[in-house]
Image (cartoon, rainbow, N blue to C red; front, side, top):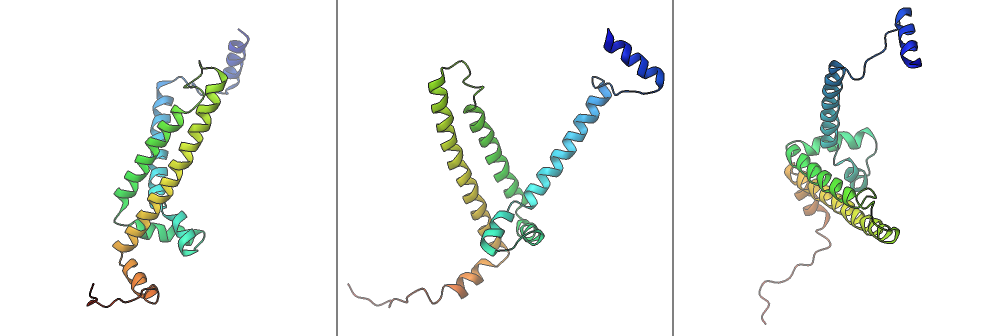
Length: 167
């Protein structure tokens, strides 16, 4: 009753509040959410190799982001599939090990499941790092940079063996 009278008083003063239950507002929110999710996915795909570039090439800031964008060129679909695969699997793993999933259980098994889920999540994050590193090497090979480094950098470390060794 009090809230209704306050809203009527504010409308009489000319202050119009947004009706959050309006169909128009919900459609506007859904469209804006879809646009923002698309933008976030685009930038994640473009910059998915930035972490690897920082570690391997010791480039920081915008230089690492630009280098990642250059390397991903031609492999955006693979980067998107890696992101979607690990994203869906990560959400399922976290959801299955969350407290809400096992709310009816006693306290003891809940702690054990949470600890086990943390171990699996750590292993999962290591796999994400490995997948991004493999994608980085594949993208470098696609751009013709990997073979040159291998040919120039490791020549001194290999020992040539004679072909005609008799056993």
